[in-house]
Length: 225
Image (cartoon, rainbow, N blue to C red; front, side, top):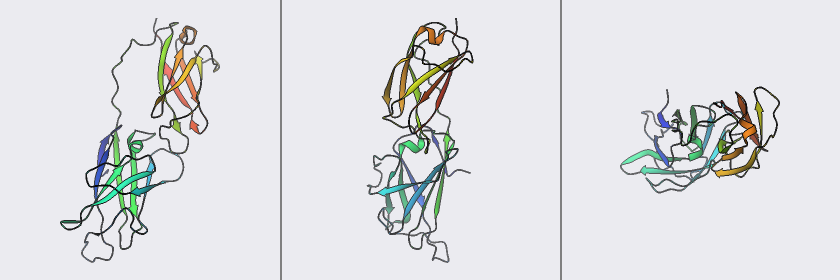
């Protein structure tokens, strides 16, 4: 069972965790940890993503204030060492909650002296479907700025700054460049491409997007007449 459920795409998420003292015979909590405590590390893994777990570098934060971080940094601090000893806050990087290649994110805090390892399982809820801002794809009609996401081949997370190549297959034909044009980055791992009229002239169109260091992205379009 997950420790908590979070909507996919949630940002600036701070979670609170209890950390127990392994030297206590009565299950006491362990007070006094900071982001810089000797041996303290945090690792994460995203369900369905190939490769080893990835380490987060813990950084300083003020209680209740999310620390802007990338996929390898996370704020960590005690809640109140006097009144709530052993309870801590952890800032979850936005990229971990983007719904990448799986429905759960597993983290573990461990390594400090007298610390019981603290696993944290986050269940991501499905990304809500966005309402269509424009009409559906029409057969043999140009389509501008069709959006897609590129993901890192190791982490499965959305990745920015890539040079993307797009091809399309029409009705199970060979992948070809056709008249696809203007592949551009939108931001935060999202990109877009323009379809020419000939690129939508079929019953089923499969778009393939590739970039160095990324998983191939495939998108299926079903034009209507």
